[in-house]
Amino acid sequence: MLRLLGGALVVGVTLLVVDPRAVIDQLADLRLRWVLLAASLSPVLHVVLACRWKYIAERLDAPLRFSHALRDYYLAGFVNQALPTGLAGAALRAIRHGRQSRPDGTLIGLGTAASAVVIDRIAGLAALCVCGLVAAIVLCFERPMAGLVGAGSVLAMLVVGCTAFWLTARNARFGREFVVSARRALWQGKAVAHQGLLSLLGVGLLSLTFYCAARASGVDAGLVRTMVMAPLILGAMSIPLAVGGWGVREAAAAALFASLGMAASTGVAVSVAFGATSLLASAPGLVVWLLPTQRVRRPDGDTAPGLP
Image (cartoon, helix red, strand yellow):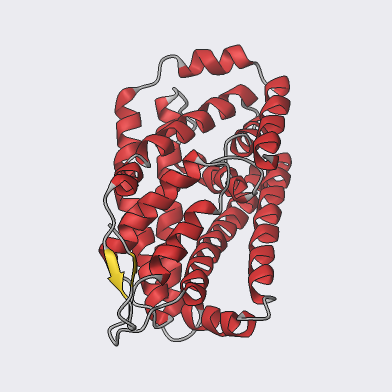
C-alpha cells in the first residue's frame, strides 16, 4: 500500500509540473513500427539476463538450466509489472530455483537460491551505476544542471545497491556465506569479465529499447544522446517507491529532459511509452504463470512443487 501511495504521490507531483495534455497529445500518435522494434529487443535482453543468472548460480554450486532461467526471468518481469512490489519477482525466482535439485540429488535450498538472485540484481545495478556515472560526466559538459540530475540518479542507485547488499550480508544465518558467495560470483577468476560483459550488454539493450520508445513517441534526440540519458532515467526504477517503476521513472525523465532544455512533458511521454512497451514485452510471463507445474522429487522421496 505504501508503494502504491508513493507511486501515486510521485505521479501527482510530476503532473503538476508538466502539461498532461501535451503528454497525451504526444502519445496519441505512437509509431507502431518503433513499438514493435522495442518489443523485439525484449527476448534478446531476457536471454542475456538468463545467462547472467545461470552463470552466477553455477558459481555458487547451484546449477540452473538455461530454459528455467529464461522462463523464470519472464515470470519475474510480469509479476513485477503486475503487483505492487519490486520484490515479488525476485522472491519467485529464488523460491522456484531453491526447489530444484543438484546432480547428486540434494536440494539447492532457499538460502543459496536467494543469494544467487540478490547477487544477480546487484550485478545489474552495478552496471547501471557505471553507465550512469559515465553518462552524468558526459552530460555535465553539455549542461551542468543535467550532470547534477544525473549524479542524483547515480547516487540513488548506489544507495539502493549498497542497502540491498548490507541487508542481505547482515543476516546472522548466512551473512558471511553471502559475502563469500558474492566474491566468488562477481570477482574471482573470469567472473569480472563475464559479469561485466553480460551486465553492460543488458544495459545497452535497455537503452536501445528506450531509444525505440522515444522514436515511437515522436522524439528524435539522437541515438547516442538518448542512450546516454537512458541509464540515468531507468536507474531511477531501482528506487522501491512505485509499481513497476511507474511514477519514479517518469519524474526522472521529466527532470533530465528539462535540464537538457527539452520539454518535461516530452520526457514523461517517452517514459510512458517505454513503460507500455515493457509491459507488453512481459506478457510471456503470464503464459509461464499459467503453465501447469511439475513435481520435484526430494532426496527423502517426498515431492514439492516444481517448475512448469
